[in-house]
Image (cartoon, rainbow over all chains, first blue to last red; front, side, top):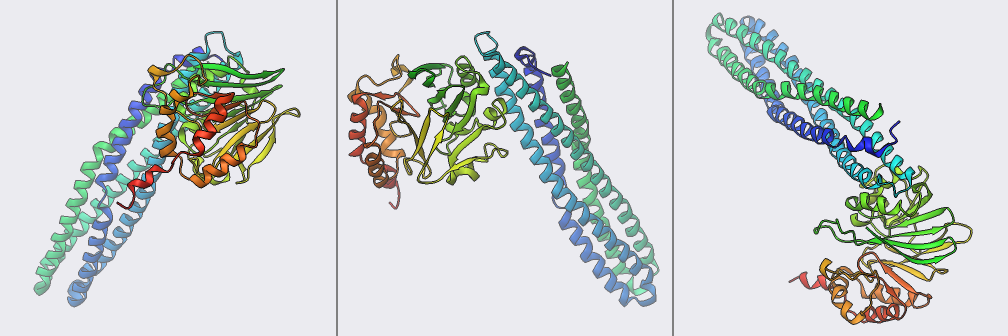
Length: 240
Length: 252
């Protein structure tokens, strides 16, 4: 158990490093969320495209049977994107809440660190120094828990990004197959080709989102893990 | 941070903490008060986050931290209670926090885990010990709409919150904590009272109620304290002052 204010004094630099890295991590998360900002709009465009494609497939009769099946797969992918978007919205809220807890805790740590510095001159009630040191340790434990929570959020963000990558890959296949069906569709070729081209355009937009987000997600993952370890090291130093 | 004992009789004490020389210029100076009786103490307007380290250091020269049994917040301002989560970490877990019922949900923004003993509009009496009772006296709209002073009939001290407050420049701050020249002190109180305090009706009601009290020391949350004849001088000065000057900026 931490009883000595002097142990607390050694933590100031670590707290500064945690603050700097937490700010950088939040910046990465913000950039990643921003990259996926139009995901719901894109999902909606894809849904409308699949409906129009289904109508065109209906008009094509027998020649549109395969395309009709492909539009249904497309709608499943749209549902997946909507699910991912919903998950990201709640993840964004959690990430910012955790970030705010980190900032608040770091501020309180700095104040207790200052207090420990002022009470360890031997003129104060000893229990005050011990109480301040204990408060510092409790806050550090809370900070470590929050940093772990933040690291979990970053892992989830990486998983959702991977989910979008899978949708891109599958949508790309669907676009290719519709293009193949278009070649054999006779008078409906132009219509099906338009569907395929539009879908490729949306796939390209999704790829751009992923490209924008990927670096940020990768950095966030590395930072999140490093932060968690830094917090654990600080706590370990305090408690031993 | 300075600590001055205002009253002492056996183990019954009033102490004021303030005029921290290390306070940054952009942070308003505040007075924090400790009322002690036996092994119990209540901290009145414990202060903002920024003064917490200095306040903890100054206070624990005088008293063990676990003797603080209660905190009193006269109203919701951050210079009064934003240090709440920090005090609750170092003091006992069963520390009481007194606050106007009006502000409990708002002050929770400083410390969402705190629970408050809320004060009804008409005020209340609390016993710090068997020997010492304190009265929380309503002072609503002066300036906060849910606002209380603290009166100790034994010590004849009235903690008056923002009433009596003065913004004394650091370079002009006197060596002591008390006003010694009331006429010269007015310039530091005038602007504050005219702009911050809202209601002349409330002012008149406050003057009527405190005029019935026996007060040796009037102790505000900012600036110098009043003792002896200066208490009466202040109440008389305040009773005729035009306040609520912010209204002039409205509906122009």
